[in-house]
Length: 145
Image (cartoon, rainbow, N blue to C red; front, top):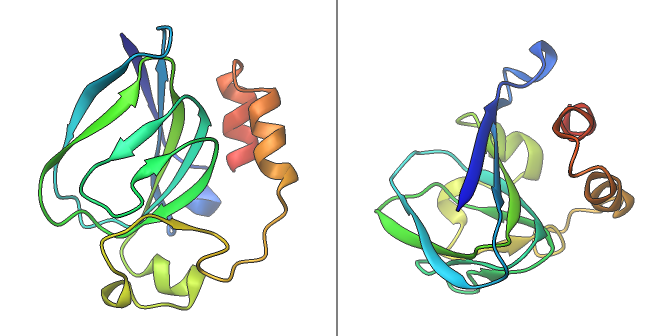
């Protein structure tokens, strides 16, 4: 069983971020088909805090703890996740991907990217800060903002 919650970003981020989605499993690690993903036209930053997720449509779609980026979804598919997964899906508004990563979305292939793949220098302590407060959604939300 998964709990989900959608949060709207702070006003200063609304031009860049459409929504934050939190999805948290309450199981013991069994891999299940958790959700049908439909085309959305949004590039996404995907933060995995616990468990394992597999976006089967993408090469390298199997993800464990870390931060990933994936191009806009163009066709429906089923995502698989361990039932103890905890992840945050940050949907970017159209055209923001280029602004953030200096790469045109159409140049991306059907794969999951790490920040290193996109040559982004990133303070890895951010992931640790979110992980340490993951059970307090307000603290996580404040870190994201």
